Image (cartoon, rainbow, N blue to C red; front, side, top):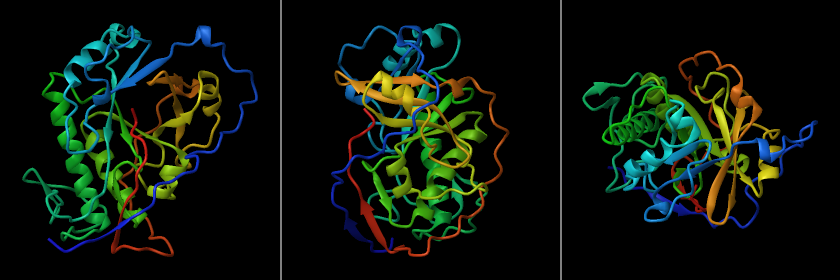
Length: 302
């Protein structure tokens, strides 16, 4: 392991996302809209609401390498939603992070995971805080999350998987490395037959990942935007800018009475995009700080 110097960033005090553009048409009356909920480990032991139209359940316990202890029971609750009873598997979300080769945490030293070679668009991993190693790390974190879900008796394929990208977990200053982490996760999940999307706010995603080009498998993913403050503003967020230029905002989130609610945008019913190309390395930003690490802190998804 290489010694790593950590740089702790100050907590951000400003609003994490600007208000999105307003749609040209009047919002659909909420009485005719089926809202969903997302839940995870913070809701363990709590009384859950009556099953909503759809649900999104957290696989992890706040970090990529942890387990939501209530995953099985929460998935059973999600099976009772309108989507679940109609045969659509509940969506899940997974925590994401790029730690680099720090002590006590796994970080790859080559292009293998689980004894198998990982096809790596960034070249060879050599135990460094590089895009090549972050890609393998993301691949492994997604594989671990998939194993956790399968242990509850649920399948990985034909299910929506959201990548939770927030300041609450550790990220590197080099955004190219952070992007490679998410690309590795996406590659594993898409290879397992799952659909993948990104959960974040525009501000957090821009600071963690930055610009994403069309050669990345993140470019056209569905987006789940956080930051709305009411059901009405959640509808308006559907008209906001996507996290990546080729992305589509299909879901938005607001919180009320300590519970997260989600609104499905009209774009959620649009045809699925064409299969994504293998991600190509993203050019590094003009100013990188690849030897420094940051832990940025903010509220978790739930």
